[in-house]
Length: 355
Image (cartoon, rainbow, N blue to C red; front, side):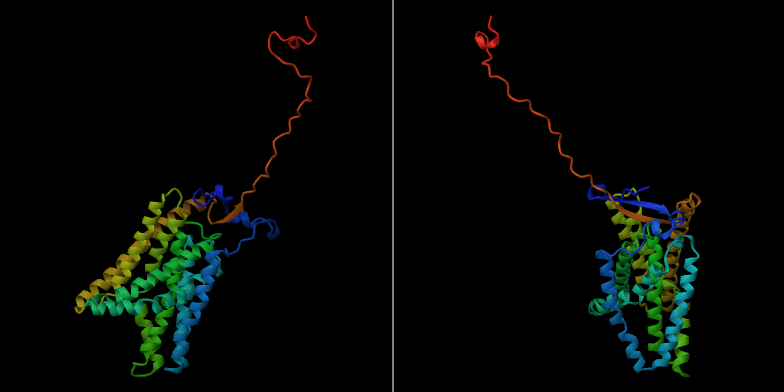
């Protein structure tokens, strides 16, 4: 059935959702080919990712010089293991089903590149300096970290939902994309902190890297996946939920974006009291985790109902509506002109034969 909010008959195209099993039952040469969408969204994603990869590579390049290639290699190995385990766990969920590994990898890559580069090299330091100048030191990392980072990760989710719309076509796929982006960002960030702070370990840099990775995993595990999962869920609702007005779609984006930002900002608060610090860390992480689990449970229930009906997972086929060629009006033969008569009473010509 076409999705009314995605089909545009007036613009000459429609969207058909086809069960994946039905689509795959046909030989490859007899079914529509599924591929990423290379329009303005696809090229924007590619361009930003390539530029961001160059910028993000500067960090490990500097760390290779100091403290050296050993800590960088070990931190990178931990990052790969972290992403692999988190990705595997997410792939066991019903809402992940039907996601191609290349699309999931692109989301993780955005978390490691686009999210980091945009979040770190744009307004982050300016917001931190502004917080100090306004004497609100407690909010420095909340504004300088949470605000640009969540916007950068949300941009990636929004682009990916358009690039991969052949496979990601349900509201919960925004949640899946957000968590994958969060995995990539968290892996890159943890590796950077491990190398940067591992040099302070009294025994060795390698031991310091391992210790910092352990601390980062224990303190706020999957924080970025939680925050961006919430943001992505709202973006997915705005794009793929049927029957919503544009105001409700906008409300989903704003509400979920605010939720993800507040969880991240609450975690980044800098308070003097130890008790207050523990309270806001546990409260922020617990609230975010509860909201994300709730979204996963609701989405899984909807996905299970569609799967039971054989309609999930599904692929979206975008078809051009053929336009009928213009039809010329029929030509009506015109009879040849007859003899001319002055047709009015009293004229002899009124009666062709006379009286």
